[in-house]
Length: 432
Image 1 (cartoon, rainbow, N blue to C red):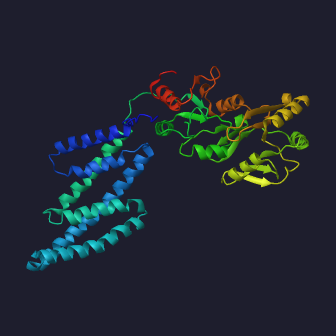
Image 2: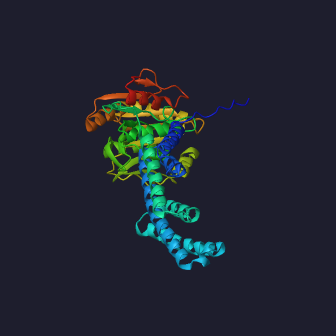
Image 3: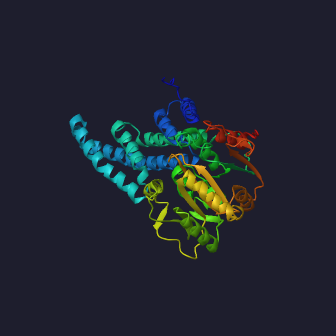
């Protein structure tokens, strides 16, 4: 059965574009059509962007390009008038005028582009050419070149001003910058395709730009996080590896790590080998995640190595764990019965009281189970307490899928709920 097609919602950026266009027409009306509103409209629409930083960057590009193009346009008009005055009847011939205009435009466009290179404004080169050509090709016959170039410059400035004003407008409400928002990732912030929706990505980045205190808490490694949320401009460290590490995405460094001692790590590794199991040993060396692994006949184990070692954020090393290395966590992947048997061995040895041990079924490999072994203190709750210390924020709102464990429960398939609830509280003070 085919799903009914749903029209996409008209976004805020589209609405703002319409408002900006209307304002440009209003200004043109009061200017009594002294300028050309078309140029104002183009500039305003160019400045309507998803994020304020993009708006400012585009505004600077447009302004720089307009200044360079307008100045060369003025020079072109003055040179053209001088030539027409000097040549008299010869210049009055349309064919002669067209040829001279074509040669002069072709030569001067080189200077326009070269000027953007000299001034380190290469990104504005297109706009410089557009402005120059609009003057040189369409308005060569204007009676007053100074007046036209000034109006052309003013039209652009009006459009830029309107674009920035409309794009940056928000109600003068005090933002909630004394709350730390912490969200899970899979089945919470991400949709069924393991991506953020367009709405969540845009609104989350916009709020982060305005000072939202937000971070993610996940069982994933920082490497997996960087691949998944690379488009999110997080400023706070993220809680990763189920609370074993606090990772700074901006600085690419670990702020806090819970590890197992070298002695405990070696004992565990020996026990794993005696049980006939293979494991991935995750160690942090100089803010770099190193994963030690070995030869194996385990197909799922080998497939993990083959798939993940291609990542630039992971460093797989095919050798035994060095004696003095402290381990962040061990990861085992094997048949359910073998993992269950090993869990029983750990329990008999009292390791389940000394360490944090997780078991769960693999979604990718049927009949296989994961086991992860951490320092006992490695928990999301402990890392959140540490986050409160470094941020000075005591209030938190958490999002997750387990009812009763989090402040806000997110149901399956409602991946926009996290951002929607945060937006209502952060911008309007409406508590979840």
